[in-house]
Every structure is written in structure tokens, then in C-alpha cells.
Image 1 (tube, helix red, strand yellow):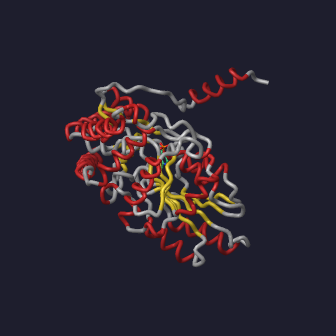
Image 2 (tube, helix red, strand yellow; image 1 turned 90 degrees about the horizontal axis):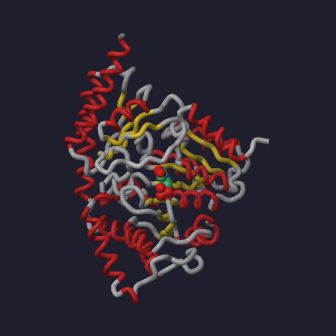
Image 3 (cartoon, rainbow, N blue to C red; image 1 turned 60 degrees about the horizontal axis):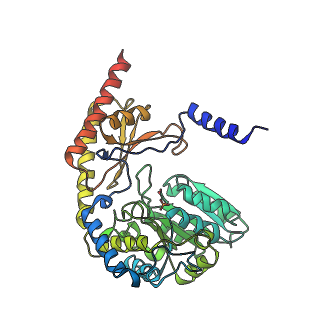
Length: 409
Ligand SMILES: Cc1ncc(COP(=O)(O)O)c(C=O)c1O
């Protein structure tokens, strides 16, 4: 038998040899961010910081009468508070949902939802690019079947669902359909209207349940950043929505929006809620502060700035694609999306070239994306300046020019 530490080393060496070893990195403070999920640049916003400090001060003065800092336990034991419950109601109202339940992270929320809601005999049908946290939930789930459909393909979803309806004697069971609104790697948006139409057509008994993860869309899309579901006005057609706070909202944690009965069921059965210490009071205040800003329309100008930056970057990418051979480099983007992929055969080299010039972009390698679809992921932010965007496009262009020249030699 291989001793444990040797097994660890072998596994890491194997990843290293495939250029797939993951490492923790610390960014230089002055680097330009084209990588994080801080789409509204709220994380660095003095408006949010000062409002948060004000809210924190208001809550913790005088300190002897203030709530404890740490929650002290699970929500089910000592970790609950009126503040947490009011926050859930406030966020649920903002999102036009009957109820909400906080989780410590989006990962916990998805793991909780998919591990406990599908019952024995049920089926989960999921977009092939669904987030790892949904896979984690599915691994623990009692559902009979877990079936993937091709990314964002309504036709393929129809094929999978029809097969289930026509050939499965257990069709009377429930079907859970898992999608995201804005996908984190390709930056494309789910065709929600068509998915909902399809579900209504195939499941007149209403035993299909759509679960929509709005992690990347929160803050970015919809009125005051409420998300794609509300932008389309289809909240009644969605069983569960998951909004996370760690991306555009510059905080941490997540909420599952659902009906009151489902909330009660999750409180009783979601192990990622039950067996973990609830968020601290300052963490809850941070979430409330960010939502108050959204609710009062104070993030609208950031949403608009982000869209202006997206249009500008797109126009610069179009210029690039007019001059650079597609075999060397290709830029993919989608309507209004802040996530772009720059495809090339050497994403690590391209990312490093940009990083050396103080521009933070990341190579995304298999297995995070399918083999052959490796790319550099570019995320735009409300706070990126035109000058910064120009620097990035120029760096990409210079790198591609050198590659073309090399390939001609
Ligand atoms: C689509 C999606 N869902 C859930 C999560 C997990 O959210 P959190 O970072 O809050 O755990 C992520 C984070 O990367 C995500 O992209």
C-alpha cells in the first residue's frame, strides 16, 4: 500500500505534470481586476464601506447592549436571531418571493437544496455546466436519476424530459430541473422563458420543479439588481431561486427563496444548514447594508457603468477579431454579460503575459471547462476605467501578434 503522504505527493505531481495543479495566489494590491466576481465593484466602494461602518456602529453602540459578535451555534440552536429572520423577510420581499432561508454560502445552499428536497424515485435534470455545488447536493441526494442536458439547449432538455415522460413508468414522481441564469465560465444566460414554456407543456400535473441559481446575476441584472428571474417576471414559474452574496454584493452567504413549507422542510432536513454555525452578526449586517443599497436604487448607476464597460470592451474585441487570426485567438461574449472568454491554445501563457503587465485575468483549464475549451476568463466591473480596458485589449493584441509572427516562422 502507498503511504498516505506519498499518495498525496503522487496525486499533486500528476496534476503538476498535466499543468492542472491548483495553487493559492495573492494579488498585488495595485493590480487591475479583470478576474473577480465583484462585478459592481462594491467590494472596493467607499459608499458601501462607509454605510457598513455606520450600520455596524449603530448596532454595536453601546457595546454592552449590543448583540453578540459570533452567532454562537447553528440556526437551530443558539445561532438564530430576530435580525436574521427579519433579514430573510426583507430579502424575500425585495425578490418578490414568499419566504427565504439564509445559508452560510451558495455552496451550502445548493448542497442543502439538492441533497434533501428530491424524494426517493424523483429525478434531477441539470444543465451540463451546472455549478459544482449542485453536483455536491446531487451526490448526497435520494433522487433515483440524475440526468444532464446539453448546455443551454432547450431541444436537448426537451429530449431528456420527453424520454422521462414517455419511457419511465415512474413518471408520476417529481422532476427537478437545475439551471443557472448567468453561467460563470461562458458568461451566457439561460433561455428561461423557453425552459418554462417547455416545462408547462410537458408537465400539466405540475410535478416539475425549476431551481434557478442566480449567483452571478445577482446585482447585475434586473431592476436594482434583483436578478434575471424578476427581470423576466417569471418568479411564479420558479420553485426555488438561489441568490449569493459573495459576488456582486461584496459579502458572503446565500439565500434560498422558496415557499414557507419548503423553507420549513429545509430547516428540518438540510444538513448544510443544520450542522454548521450560523453567520456572525457583522456578516448579517454586511448583507443587509448591501441589500439596502440595492433596494434604494443606489447600485443602479453601477449597473449602468458595468453595461457601458461591457459595450466598450465588446467594441474593442470586435476590432481585435478584425485583425487577429481566429486560429490564434478568439473572443466570445454574450448579450449584456460581464463574463468574456478569450480562447487560445495557450491560455496560461496569455494570462501570464497580462498578469506581468499588472492586469489580473485567469486561465481556466480542464476539468473546470471541457477539454479543448480552455480559455482566459475576463470579468468586467463597474469600476474598471476605459484606460484599464484599453490596457487589457492592447496586451491581448500584442501577445496575439507575437504568436502570429512565431507561427509564420
Ligand atoms: C453558480 C454558482 N452557484 C453557487 C456558487 C457558490 O457560491 P458561494 O461562493 O457563495 O459558495 C458559485 C460560486 O462560485 C456559483 O458560481
